[in-house]
Length: 246
Image (cartoon, rainbow, N blue to C red; front, side, top):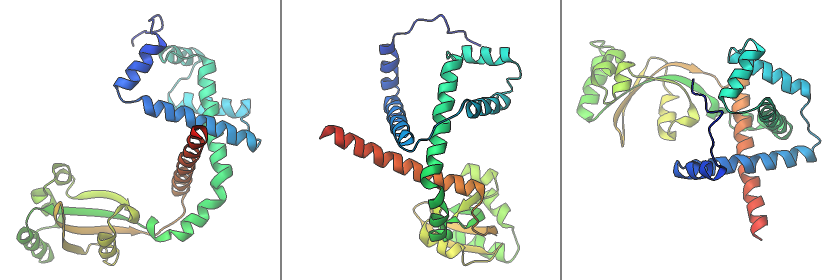
């Protein structure tokens, strides 16, 4: 552990370092967004109680395995912040969550219903080769059970990581796929080999291990709400900057 608590750094040096590492804009956006959140929360009489701050602090301490008060103080010192700084940060995050809930809780179900198809999921395996003849030959070999899809991906895929994972791409949402590929895949049956499909990357053979119906799970609810909140913040920032410019 490096102790920087006694090091002397001027604010201008910090700003200069952020600019040189191309992080200055991100920090400025964070500051602007918090101003917007504070103003909108005040207009809606949203506040954060000491009990809520304490509950979140306890959660973070548990997550970081800071069992004793001394452990927490040592961690804060290592981060070059005080307990007040830490609690202020917690307050900002909790207030942001409360505002997000107040603004968009009722909109999430509506958005999900209107875009239900996009939230269908699948467990996808993929094999990409550079030539159509190779793709067709592999397709027929897999169909004739001369080789499994997983073996073919492990031996012939152009991507090293996918070769190591025998073609495994993971659990994907329909919206994350190109529309033409999504249409073909979602009309297939599990374990059916689809392709070859030509893209800029090469010739694709695809296989779905499992289709997962769209469901408004807690994770998807949170994802939609966060997306709406980020879009709202960006819109509010644009309006604020235009107002100041005028």
